[in-house]
Image (cartoon, rainbow, N blue to C red):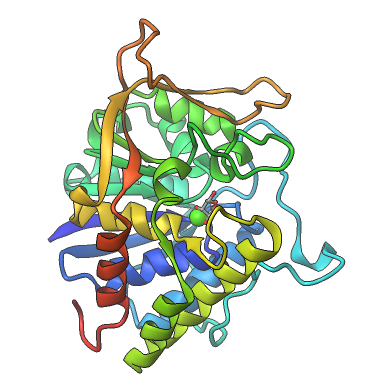
Length: 320
Ligand code: RIB
Ligand code: CA
């Protein structure tokens, strides 16, 4: 059983990742920390609590950083949108009845990783890296205590931010935090950029199959994934219409099934100078620079294997 902590900015794909982590018997979800990202921190925390309550999990939730380390916060409050967001701001689940723990996520991460279980627990960053960078800055010894850090973010040949077309949302929201993380010296950093996640998409037929599984989790997953397909069709059309990546779930799935992705050990840094490339990950795929590789980068994915695993885990009546 692999222990993991998920650092999340819960929207629909974080929700699928949390479900996957909770239901896969090879994973033990120790805790969740929340960060500003898809929506403001109070929303990401509320969404995380909704999903934790829905799944009946005992893993504690800690709220973290409400804004990026340096740059102004680009995340808008959903109330300020002229029309409801197609991405969905509040998860379509019953209101949460549990509360976040009193400790700040950054302090929880430091206390946990400096304690005895730290070196055995993988940390997974599925949102902007603000909490993780803040913890590394506050306690630099964490670098040697975190055995592996899995990060969903960045892109080499793909981006998803309008004002910085080569940048990916999580890294773009807090590029300074991402730069701290990639330069940290953590022994094993695994990056899951859009180059991999856009090659592992769900279709309406996958949603139908999850729905037909007849379980509450399968039905909720079907709703979330249909919403993602609709959102991509509306605002970010992909090469294959009527599909959607489930970025965060692929990242978690690769912990238990590393063969789902093809990785290369490469040097990664982040552009922090304002402009068209703000927040872009510089992934040295040609190995032209002199810098030592610092990250295992997933540049491709096995879509059929991922989708079959996702359907099996999220559609299972019992734990998979
Ligand atoms: O760019 C995709 C990432 O941004 C995903 O983690 C999504 O949940 C958002 O955080
Ligand atoms: Ca996310």
